[in-house]
Length: 404
Image (cartoon, rainbow, N blue to C red; front, side):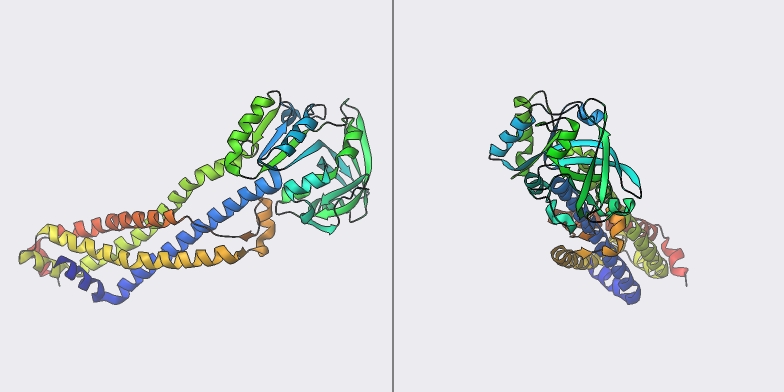
C-alpha cells in the first residue's frame, strides 16, 4: 500500500518529477563521463611517459642524477646494455650519452639537454623516428648532425639544415663546443621535451665529452610490465654499484597521480551527488509542504509515522531508481563510443602539451565504477529523503488538516 501511494504521488506533479529525474540523469551522465575522460587521460599519460620518455626502467651512475655532470658515466654500461639485449624479458634497450649546456644559433641561444643516442636502439625504445615532422632521422653516414624539437627551433629561429653550436663542459671541466647541422625537427605531445631535448649521435657527443664507450643512461622497455619489479630487483643484485630505477621512481608525480586518482574520483563523485541531493531535498520538501492537509488526514485516519516516513522516502528512492539506470546507460554508451573513436581536442593542443598530455583522449571507465556509482547514488537518495520525511512526521494532524 505504501509503495503504491508513493508511486502515485510521484506522478501527481509530472513536471516536477520529470525535472528531478532529468537532473539526476544529467548529473550521473556528466559525472561518469568526466570520470572516464580523466581516467583515459591519466592512463594515456602514463603509457606515453613509459613508451616515449622514461621507459620501464633506467640505469645511471648514483651521482649523475644529482649533479648531471659528464664525469659520472656508467663504467659497466657497455656490458650492462649487452646483457639487456640478450635478456628474454627485454623488448628494447638503449644507451645514451647525456650532458647539459647552451645551444646557440645565429639569432639566439638557450639552455638545453644534449642526448647522444644509438639511432636504431633509441627508435626501438622511444619511437623517435616517428615523431620527426620535418627532415629525416639519423643515417649511418651522419656525423655532427642533430635533431631538435619544433618549439626549440622556433625559439632559436632555425630551420632544417641550419647550423647550431652546442657548448658544454667535458669530463675534465673544460669548455667544449661543436657545430652541428639540423637534419630533422620533431614534434611531441610534451612541449617541455620539445623545447629542451636535442638529439645527436652518441659517438659524436662522447668524443667531445671524452667519454668513449661510456653511457650516462641506459633505458629499457619490457615485454610485460608485470615483470618490472622482479627485473629491477634482479638487476640491482647483479649490478649493485649502479642506480636502477623504475618509471615510478623516475617520474614520481605519475606514480602519485595513478595511486591517488581513485580517491580524487570518489571525492569528485561525492560533490556531484551532493549537488543532486540538495536539489532532491528542495523538491521533496516542496512536495511535502504542498500536501500538509493530505498528510495530516492520513495520520488522522490511522497511518502511523513510520508509514508516512516510508512513503516520503520511497518517493525519493523511486525517482532515483528511475533516473540512475538511464543516466548510467547513457554514460556507458557515450564512453564506449568515444573510447573507440577517441576525442580530438586539437583546438587546445598547446594547453594539453604544456602538461605533457596528448590532445587525443580515449575515455575509459572500469565496469566496477558503475556499481560503485549505483551504491553511492542509493545512499545519497536515502540521505536526501530523510529531512523531507522527518518534516512530514513532525506535523500535528489537527493543525495540518486546518491548512488551506
